[in-house]
Amino acid sequence: MTYSNLVFPDIKHLVEKLHFNPEEGKIWLAEQRTVLMGLGALSSFRKEIITTLGMARAKGFFMRLGYYSGMRDAELAKKLNPDADPDQAFLTGPQLHCLRGMVKVIPLALEYDPAKKHFYAEFEWVDSFEVEICRMSLGQLDEPACWMLLGYACAYSSYFTGLDIQFREVECRGQGDQHCRIVGKVASEWPDHEEFSHLFREAPLIDELYELQSRIADLEQSLGYPENLPKAIGEAPPFTSALEMIDRGANAEVTMLLIGETGTGKEVLARRVHSMSSRKDGPFVAVNCAAIPPELIESELFGVEKGAFTGATQSRKGDLRGLMLELFF
Figure 1 (tube, helix red, strand yellow):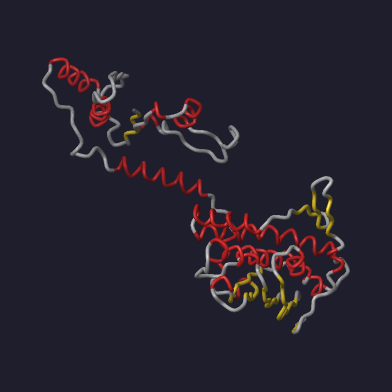
Figure 2 (cartoon, one colour; figure 1 turned 180 degrees about the vertical axis):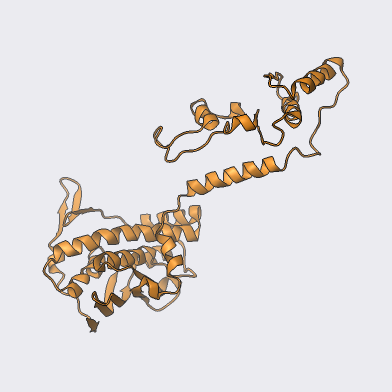
């Protein structure tokens, strides 16, 4: 069915689902517990997330936040309107946006045909809370600013209709336009739908940090032992005797213990053993154990399995990985 000059149904039935229970410290919208939070805190929070993660990651973070909210409101809309016309029931989502104080929604067009799997919608957003919080702490952006609202619209429409719907904010006051306006279509009708869908996929930063750490370690090992680093040079009989002992034992499967104060050249001698041993083609792993807190020494050296303790969200190899093919110092 196609609509133009759309008018929302009476919002009274939604307002009646909003309950305040200050005695228990709770606010309810139907069966959903909700909270009231000032825009000042949200503005500071968004600024910190952008500063910490960068603009691209922050955008995905807030779009996913809105997406999760849209999913739940789609379920709520169906429960609240079990016998309503699907097209009118769909407008519950934009009304919930208004009721939550997030934005005033003006419907401009809605074409929804479940049989043909067709969807097209246009909405204007008035007084978006996201534009306001951006102006409070970030000023005018170079791109649309209503990330949470956009994620909400995508999820709500997709879960309500059963189609993969994507919206784009084609105009935004946050980037200097006169209005905020969104357009929604079936995802495949957008040329960049695959790239856009990546915004809704979790991308844990910790995984990238561990990957970069591993790459740096591999790169350092691939560089070998630079020629300009100090070599084992000396003429004192005890020193030359130690070198001879190291040279004899380097190719043997024996245990060597290097003892000395800081700065006496233990790592230089350890690298000499490595360069002359049968493991010279493997990396040389040097770890300053004194710099590792006692409670972390086991996990740093031997690794940790996901769920082994609180905070272990993924498995990770320790520095003693592949010891049979490497030299650990």
